[in-house]
Image (cartoon, rainbow, N blue to C red; front, side, top):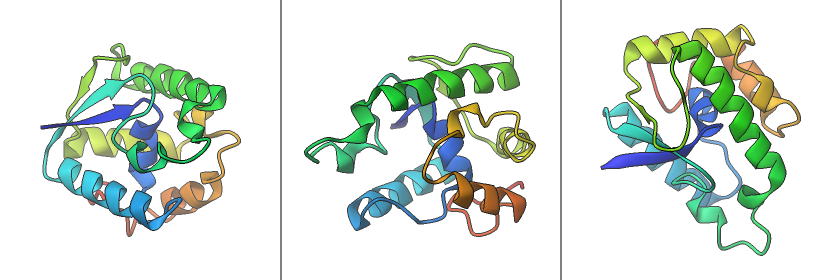
Length: 142
């Protein structure tokens, strides 16, 4: 199988540490982080993805909002620049330890953070990155 992720979730997964919008959201995200940690590949998609799934039954899921689409566009641009290849719907990413280290280094340095501006989780992510990514659901290279 392959994990389907929208572009800004490529950044979110770097600092995910078991916090979320609801218990169902967190349980789902934990399972996805486990799959990625075990080497499952990632397919970049437009719009709601596997992480969004528990929220889609809400009356007004933020997953469809324009602000989230803007986050995706900014994240895709920054990650594409970091990887020196296009990142768009249909792109595949294998998050091995080398790529995880590269992405976390760039995130901590602020080079891939444009998508994070205004995000309610930004301060938590800042703290996790500043702490060397300890306690994250996807262990490995800081």
